[in-house]
Structure formats: structure tokens, C-alpha cells
Length: 191
Ligand SMILES: O=P(O)(O)OC[C@H]1O[C@](O)(CO)[C@@H](O)[C@@H]1O
Ligand SMILES: [Fe+2]
Image (cartoon, rainbow, N blue to C red; front, side):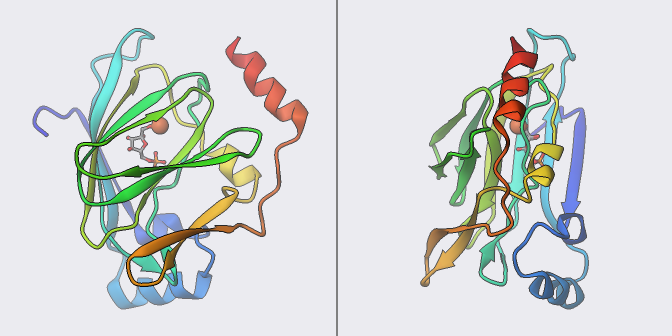
């Protein structure tokens, strides 16, 4: 991507506490060092409501124990803002969770489009054996809220390896559903 105005990297240590197998996360850190696991380059023309941020996410493949490498995940701070992703390289999925706790999975491969509707929490997962590259675009005034996942003890499901090439969803035992009042407040804030 040329002309990017922003760039950030996330390293293995930045994802401490997100994975089921804490010991495997520590072991991987000492084995590989604090390597970059994903990076985001974007172009932000402005921050006004009608404008659009777009860029590229590149995720390294890998497993922490039996769980695939993932992004931190968020809901947009202005929760009614949507997002679109376009797969360019590799295989992965978008893990979507509604405030009420419904999970939906959209598989991403080259030349597939994933639509993240308003109000859906989203996290990308690299389920393949090569890097996963996706273009994304979202309204410039969206923002990211990471606290919604922390407060519920993670997302409702984890994406784990299934056999040699597959994946499966496993319940996150630490997940605490959001109270109705919390969901209502989220909707009201956007109204
Ligand atoms: O912000 P996170 O959860 O680390 O994930 C990064 C992804 O989300 C975005 O911020 C878009 O909302 C992209 O830049 C990128 O694909
Ligand atoms: Fe987003």
C-alpha cells in the first residue's frame, strides 16, 4: 500500500491474556521472541463523519496451543459504524459477535468480501498456513472500543484448530454475557 498515513504493529506480548492457553503463549514468546503478529497500515484523509479510513491488515499465521492467531478485536466507539473487508491473500475468518452475544463467522479468502454490520464486535483470525492480507474500509469517525471484549471476559467463542486444516468454535468458559441494560445503552448512544 503506497501513501499510507498511519501504521501500527502488534507483537505477541501485546496479545497477552487473550488466548486460552497462557502457558503456550509464554512458551511461544520465549521460543520466538516478541515477534510482530499483525500490522495495519491505513490512510486517514480526515476524521469527519462522511469521510473514510481504508488500509491493509497483514496477519502472520500461527497457533497459541490449539488456538489460531487473532487480532485484539473491538466494537467501533461509535457503535453504529460498519466496516468492509476484502480478502487479498491467505485464508482466515472474521469472527463477529452481536452485543446480545450471537456469533457469526465469515470466511475470508482472496477476492471475498466481508461486511461487518453496525454494532457487531469483530476480530480477524488467520486459520491458514500463510499470511492473511485484507483490505478494509470504515467511516472515519468510527473509533475503536476494546473494553467491550475485556468486560465480557473475551469473545463468546474461540477459534481452534480442527484436524490438520480445519477450524472449530469452542465456547469461551470465561465469557460473561452483556446485561440487557448494557446492550440498550449501546443502542441509545447511537440513536
Ligand atoms: O484494532 P484491532 O482489533 O487490533 O484490529 C485491527 C483491525 O481493525 C481495524 O482497526 C479496523 O477497525 C483495522 O485497522 C484492522 O483490520
Ligand atoms: Fe473495526
